[in-house]
Amino acid sequence: MKISKRIIRIINFKSLVSDLFFDICLFTSIILLLTSCDTTDPPPSNQKLTLAAEDASCTEAWLNLKLENITTPIEVTLNCNDTVAQISNLSNNDTTLFVENLLPNQTYTFQTVIQSTNLKSNSVSVTTMDTTSHNFTWETFTFGGGGNSILRDVAIINENNIWAVGEIHTAETDKFDSNGVWVKPYNAIHWDGSSWELTRIVNDGYPRRIVYAFSENDVWFDGSIKWDGVKYSVHNDGFPLDSNGNGWYRNAMWGVSSSDFYVVGNGGNIAHYNGSSWRKIESGTDVDLVDIWGSSDGKNIWICGNENFKPTVLLKIKNNKADILYNSKDNLFPYNLNRLSGNFTSVWTNRRNILYILTAYDLYRIYQNNINSPIPLWKNTEQIATRKARGTESNNIFTVGENGELSHYNGISWKTYMELYRIFKTYNSIAVKENIAVAVGYNYINGIEDKAIVTITKK
Image (cartoon, rainbow, N blue to C red; front, side, top):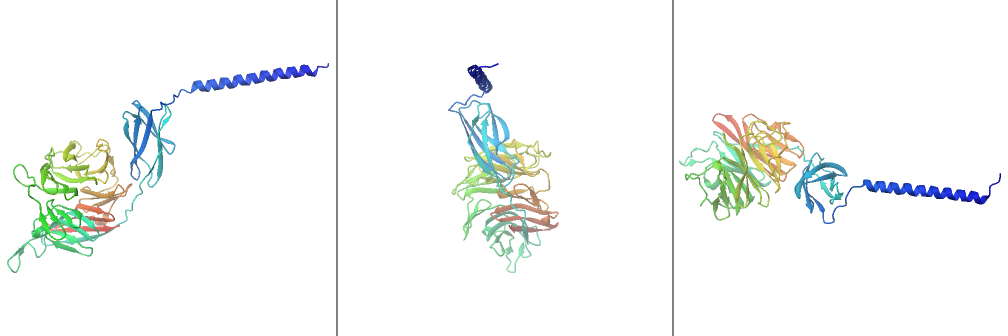
């Protein structure tokens, strides 16, 4: 049977139209389905997320996030190298984000996003610090004989100019000489790059407790005696005394210049010197204040204290006013990784927003005064010294203490130098500058004799 070509063409054309109509309907349905599933509303044009890098250690980073024209609380995702690092429910428009478990000497890229509106912040890059070496060579010098000699504090000007103070008794001191003159003990030693010289501050033998150096011609002893490179001058007039008129032990000193520094001591005493006069600063506590340190601009200054049967305290000075940030004896004995534990023995910082607190149990890092979220650096993994802490950076911190313990934190791990260990040997203080560390204290010999010691290293 013959079918005309025209009929076949009509049938093929109808089939083509039918298929095309079906394809168009199917495509339209898919588009409508996909559109109906997308419930993300575009963010208003006036909303903004601004991310900035604040700081970084070897394994941590601090980021600042600012929200503009965004209603809180809001869920924000932080991405690190395009991987979700954390999800936070933010209630403030200005927030610090803390990222941990990073690797040393690595660069990370961070970005925040609000998933509900797909609003993204700018990206920021952060490079973590590298670790430093634990490899040090130590040399110890011994002073004194025939009495109880001790060194209590040390200051480094440079590798050829170091001062240490205390009291040093030798075979020639503490008796009359051939002319009938009483020979006083020494109260300081000075390093000139090749040898130590025994000396007496203001030519007396009174034991000294503090030394702090702004420069080689601006060195202060006990907070009120200045060495200008040629002579001593005493600046005690108007120094605030206890209410009973007595003086008080001065335990530590810190400042940005000789016309702006603080001295702290027993009984909660704080004194400020402005270059010409002294002023007492009310501390709000009678606990002995044992250490003070501040940021290089002098705008953030911290003080710690402890005393038997009393709370341990942390104070902050701002605008010449002291505020108590911590005052408790609840956690003096149990060690807890999640909160400050033990007596506070030392404070140190090299940043305006980071504080290191050394306690009887650990060295804690505090960020932006958040004392309720301390970061323990020791974590009870090995023995460290717990009397004084000083450093140059977050990856180069030293601590000293009893039994000759001297420990170093390199940003990720600790090392205690057991070659310095000795029972009844105590390091009272340490100073660190550039590649030099100097620790001072005493070595117990017997019941009537102690030797003053200085341990020094170059990296």
